Length: 226
Image 1 (cartoon, rainbow, N blue to C red):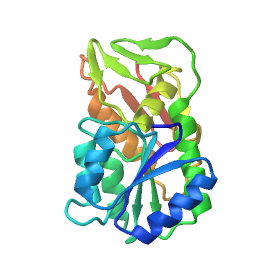
Image 2 (cartoon, one colour):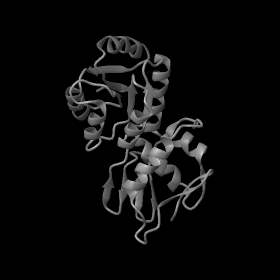
Image 3 (cartoon, helix red, strand yellow):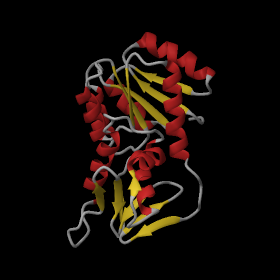
């Protein structure tokens, strides 16, 4: 696959055709799949920088695709839903989606979200790693280990972990954490940061002595307890 290779899994073939033309003009190479099963196969078998996944799909729906995909693939993923129901967004984030847009969406906003995901995934090459206690994070690949066990983190979870590990024991304010890790400011009803943190806490587990690794200071932010 070339740079900026995007996979879209959506049964709306007219929309896909429009996005192929639009995204090509923006420097993206778009591959399309029109059902959940073939989309999952393409996502696992291909080298894509970002995946766009519709919730409503024939056969295997988008949430089931995401659930299966995250067992073996951490490619940044943006979910689309025509229904726009909060439960879709919450479930998608819980299952490991990195971002979410309702349909119909403005193609310019979609391009902006894709570029943000790409910037976050590429990050800054530092050639080193962060180690806090039994957690180690490679700053280039964003791969994380607990002792010798590789952690299956999404891009958003790894970026949140990086921001917290860079200041162990220190408060990282909510808006600062969201901008660093998610590339956006939080709106008043935006729970995306909370969902990613919940997933990250579950994957990290507590310290050996039972303390929570990520502590919340209500209304202020979070810290990684060392």
